[in-house]
Amino acid sequence: MASLRGEPGAVWTLREATDALAQSARQGAVPSGLWVAGFFYQTLSLGWTFGLTVLSVAVPGTRWEGLLSNLRLPLDIKRSFEPLVLYRDVPLPIFILLCLVSFRVVAGLARLSPREVWLDARGHRRAPKLRQAWRAGKGLTRATMGLWIQLLLMMFFAALIFVGPARLLIDVLNVDGNSIVSVLVSGIAVGLILFYGFLLSIVFQIALHSLVQNRRGVASALLHAWRIAKNDPMATARATIVDAVLYFTVAIGLLAAISLLRLDLPLLVGTPILAAMLLLEALAGCTRCAYWARAYRALGGISTLEAARVSDAD
Image (cartoon, rainbow, N blue to C red; front, top):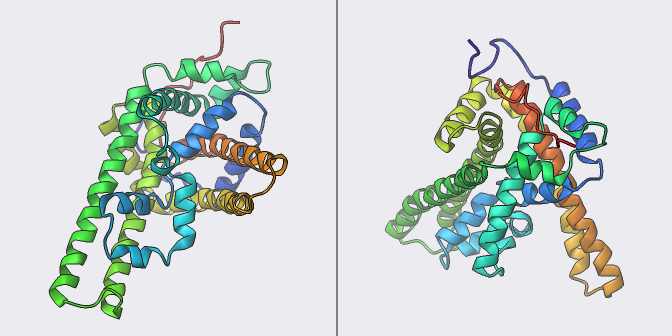
């Protein structure tokens, strides 16, 4: 009987993780309608700094703003990628429709991303079609959305738990908000939130592939992801380091593009820059999804998709 944590003694090296990222980049770089799904994947996947987003929502208008204002780079990254900010000006009905569509195609992309499934689905074409991702995501929309919402709630309540004792300590000590003690306590609280958000971002990636490749429930996928991550922490860390290289490379590229757009460039210049940003997000999403599909299997995750056929009948 297969183990939920894979083969004992199997080790995923840093070189193998790097090779997996290169293979994933080649897979994601093939022009196709799946770039739309890749864009949604990148904007909905929980990023490394989403803890700061949740902190700003959970505890608005407090003395923490003074400390957070000094963390401009993470906050700029957060504002660029996090879905809570990206969709803040979208009317509620359209937002709900976007969620239903995006979570389904994201689930479909994750389901198509394992190499053997990808090759089977593409047939004689260079890449599968977007409608294949739509079909592959059938029945997974609510579960994928539930996984995303549950992790956001976990981060939300964690932010309150981390912030509450720290604020209470500052109030008991009756120190000024700009004092060394206040900054130190605030820094520790924010550091814990960032670390917790970092852990949840890893769990989200693994849990998503566990959910779509085995059609698990949300709770089962989270438990499975946690067991995989802690089964070999060093291998998980290596996988995460390689993902971080891609994540922050994309972040730097988008921040550079955002800086150019803030210069009030002419429309003929700004439009290509905006298009390049969207394309970069799409490529990154397809690559990261394919990478974590490989990481999921390499870290010991099992799949029921080995014999699956999700290609079009035609």
